[in-house]
Every structure is written in structure tokens, then in C-alpha cells.
View 1: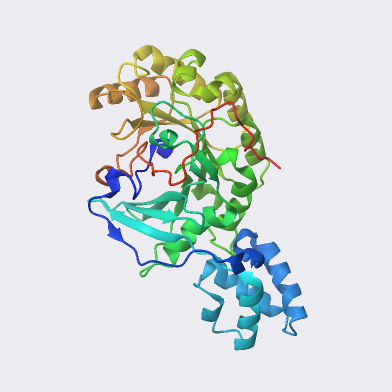
View 2: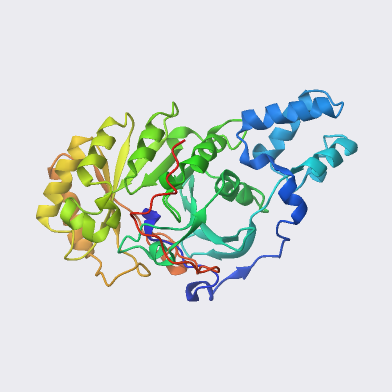
Length: 391
């Protein structure tokens, strides 16, 4: 969020108290591996594939649209629940395709209404998703990777190291799973501010954005979907080429290269000036995310430098209080200093807001997301970018 810092999981101490354990669901079977996953396809491709399959099965072409509606728009647990289809066709679908579920392993609810969900994936990896209510809005903060390779010094997720990229069905599937709850949870807004760096997984995030936005799928307006990045330039360029008006948030956290390199090793690969140039070229709204670290990045000089950067690309600035549970031994900036920092930005003709702290009692606030990796592997450094996919 910037949930760049977030999520203690079921295997970590913070998930031990106040957790309701979900009923167990079976994980993927060997037969799943040979069946085609319809949830990894964007709606147009899924419909085309199903039209071909319907023709092969002797069914009318309109059956494809019936199935597509039950993938995301009105999701079901299995083909057997698509009762508007003939029984024999449902059996044929089940023999050739799969609708994989994410296993809900734990669920926590904050006193402020925020909810955090721990999902276990088919290979035992775990991710977290947060649902944040605010008046008539319900924002889902979703994950794009299991863990994170970037090791930002104030981020709990970075302590996990990187396990793997998520697939499109695992990314958009977090939203699908919450729609399958009783009662269902359906978002007005989506932020890619959960676990992982979304623009280091563009091959899956690109299709997931289509699934989230397409009216045949989840139907969330593009301006209500924000992708947050530390500044992965190939991914920013790929997002800029999309015709939809998706929003971009950039985790800045320091207004100079020297300080940003100390806090965020990725700045060595993608220097701040290059990130600002990419933000200027991004022909849509850009937000700067800025975690307030006491005595580190919160001086009047820092505010003036940040204001200059924000003016360059007409960015809106989100100031984020440092929350317990992040990495490092940082001290939170005081509320009075945050307020003063915000005033200084406004005096520099920059729009600014101080992010509300939500879900802190369940470690769902910015910077707190972290699950314990069940299959340990050494964290990857910010220099290892083999997983940056822009194709």
C-alpha cells in the first residue's frame, strides 16, 4: 500500500490472534495440470476459445458468452454450478477446463472495518489481500507477487524475499475470491499496492488489468485502478501504452538519488531523474507515495526538493505515516511534523494528502504486509531483474 510495506501472514506471529480459520479446500490436482485454465485468459480470448469448444461439442456459439459471464461477472465455484447450461455440456467443460480457486487460509477484521485475507496458492505460497472501506468506497489492495525482490529498507514484504510471480488468475483471482464470499465483497477501487512489484510481473499484470476492467469480467473503471511501482521503467512505459486510463503511483520516499539509494536499492538501476522523466511522459494522473521516516526524509529541505519533483510531472503527493511492522529501525515522523511537511508542499503549489492509517491492529496498514515464506529461498537483489516482463 504504499502497501509497499505490508502483511504479516498466518504463519507469522501477527496472524496468531483474532484470526478466523477458513474451511479447507482441496488444492490443485494432477488432472488440473492438463486442463486449460480459463481464468488466465482475458475475456475476449476466453470467449473465442469457448466458442470453438462449443462448436466442437455440438453446442450453439452463445454458450460461450454464458460461460464467460460465470467466470468473473457472476462467478461460480465450478462448472457444475452453471445451471443455465445443459448437464452434458457442463461435464464436457469440466473435463477440458479448470477454474482454480485460491485457498482462503485466514481472515482478520480490524476495528475500523478493514479486512485482511491470507490466500494459500496451489504450491503452498501465500499472499495477502486487504479490503478497505471508506464511505461508499471499498478499495481492494491486491498482490502481484509472492514476496518481493526489492528489499526497500522500511518494507516488511522485502524481508520475505522473492518467491515467484503470480499468474493473471492469481492476481485477479483475489477479487474473484472475495466476490464468492457470502455475503460477497465487491470493490469500487483496486490498488496494486499489496505484496510484490507489479511492474516486474507485467506479463501477468497486463492481462489481469484487462480482466479487472473488462465489462464482461470484473468491470471496474480504469480510473479506479491504480498500479503502484518503485519506478520500473519498462513497466511504466508498457502501462503508458495501454489505451485505458489506469492510474500510476510511484513510490518515491526520498527526493534525491543519494538518499533514495540508501532506502531503495532499486534506485541504482532506475535513478530518480529517469523515473521522473517517465512520470512526465505518462499522460495520466500520477501520484507520489512518500513514507515519512523521522529524521531521515522529513526535513523542510526534503519537502522543497519533493515539491520541485512533483511540479515537474504535476504529481499528487500522498504522505504515508510509518507503521509498526516494517523493516529497519526507523522512527515514525510525528503527526505535527507530517502536518508541517504537508503545509510546506502546499506552499510549493503541490496537491498533497496524508494517508489515513487503516487496519493497523491487524497489520494491514501501509508497510505491514508480510507472510512467512513456506518454501525458503534466498532473497533476490534489486539488480536481478530477470522477472521484468514487458512483452
